Image (cartoon, rainbow over all chains, first blue to last red; front, side, top):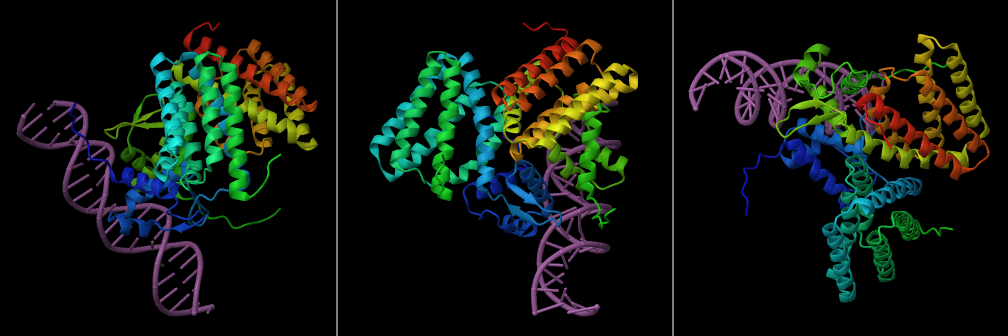
Length: 225
Length: 225
DNA sequence: GATGATTTGTGCGTATGTATG
DNA sequence: GCATACATACGCACAAATCAT
């Protein structure tokens, strides 16, 4: 194992991660008002680093600060969910297209292994494996995004995807939907292997559309056309 | 005229705008190191609001902060320029597609007027009109992005485009390229009027590709295939 | 390396703004 | 409208890290 001295992580960075986690995991309610002074007290730090963390989170879209400096947690609306998914369609289809062009063998194998593990967890069909499946499916997307080798794309998608993660953490995937997800992922992977970037992009676009459609029914009880 | 009481703009907001302007206008050199303490002194404010502005700018990609807290101005590389333009292709073609679907008559007329003004300035062919042309061309894109009515898309493109503005402020457009830009814009606009979203998206994609190609030759002296 | 000059990280006090009774 | 409680905005002080000599 390689050893390296770690620089202590700055408070504003730690506060940033803490708050991001709290929001994504749903420990704060969407739309809930939060107080920088309260957070500072809770975490036993002064308000300065908290303020900086809050600016960062505002920029990431996870916090909203109104004209009276009232800080509220991001609250997704149906329209916003659709907006986010439209962007994801455009960007992730680009990502998979780039990845298909340039992914090395090892990367493809990594993706394949992720899919195989997902299959195994699916067949297990336990409560624990549902959690594992969630991670594996996220990983599938992450591997592709990373393989795109486009830093800007990575950052944009990273930010967009955090906004949708807290839906996921509710573990709302029904078994039926899980099966669909896995088979869609497999289709995308097959196109990547065949180096068919147009097909991979198109399948990704449809996969994300299906995902939105599913989320809409589950969260807002709306049937999509 | 309507009158409304204005809230004073917070320091961190003003500092943010100031720094963003300095960076985009090229008043700081790309890669130049800047000091929060120096900025605070220059602007006669304390370091607190400056620090917050810096966090925001870091998140926007205009400042980089390394692990030793050294703050440097964003420095575009050829690869980064390509990355940005790939994202813009994906997102602006989505934007024009959405705008084509939903733009009202008035919006289309606004775009048309912008194009007509651009034509006029082009024919004028003066130093002043070159500057005006730059603004009008930017406005063309802005109007379409706004017409997409997708907030996420707007923010993402807004951030990406700031990163490319300081190239523009160098006034590098040759007359020949200006003509191309205008005619490409007109092609996009025609497709929008005909409500042909696929064509509008494809033309936007090509327009942005051409733009990248031109920038590459001008800035990095590289011919693109 | 050791030392002094900068620079950043953080805590804290005060002024000011906002909500509530 | 006023008083109180509490929130945020900002400036400032000091410690720790960094850099140059």
